[in-house]
Image 1 (cartoon, helix red, strand yellow):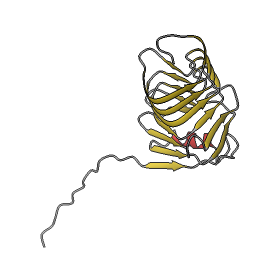
Image 2 (cartoon, helix red, strand yellow; image 1 turned 120 degrees about the vertical axis):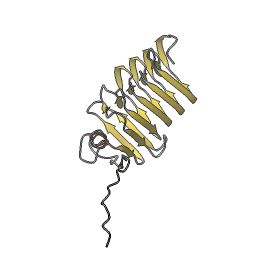
Image 3 (cartoon, helix red, strand yellow; image 1 turned 180 degrees about the vertical axis):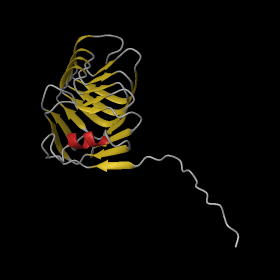
Image 4 (tube, one colour; image 1 turned 120 degrees about the horizontal axis):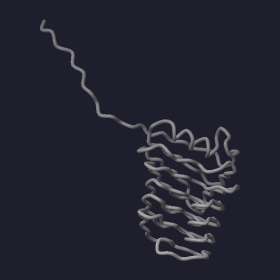
Length: 196
C-alpha cells in the first residue's frame, strides 16, 4: 500500500456575524439593554447586527461608543414610526470613532444634547436609511456632527437646534451624500457653507 503525504490546506479568513436583540423595556445598562448589546458588539471582532423591536429604547447613561475598527455594525429598527430611541440625558445616541463602520436604519432618535452633534457624532463611515432625528441640540450640528463619510437616504430631521448646522455639521474634509432627506422646523443662529 502506497503511503500518501498528509497535506493541510489553509482556508481564507472569515468573520462570523453575531445578532443581538435587546429589549425595548430594559433599563439602560441592564443585561438585556441596548447599551449592553452595543458594548458586546465592540469586543468580539465580528460583523454584528443589533435588531431593535417596536417600542421605546431609553438612554440615560451617556453616549453609545462605537470604536471597533473594520467591523461593520448594523443597527436595524422596525421602522422609523415603530422604533424609538429616547435620549434622557445631556448626551448623544451614538459616538462613532475613526475606522468604525455603522449602518443605521428604521429608527427615530428623540432628544439629545452635546457640543458636537446633539444626537450623533461620527468620524467613521456611516449609512443611515429610513430614520428620523428629532429635537436634538448642539453648538455644531443639532442632530449630527459628521467628521467622516456619511450616506443618508430617506431621512427626516425635525425640530433640531444648533448655533451652526441645525441638522448636520459637516466638518472640514468630511463627506455627506444625501438622497430624499427632509428638514422640518430647524433652528440655527448662524449659517455656513458646510452646514444643513
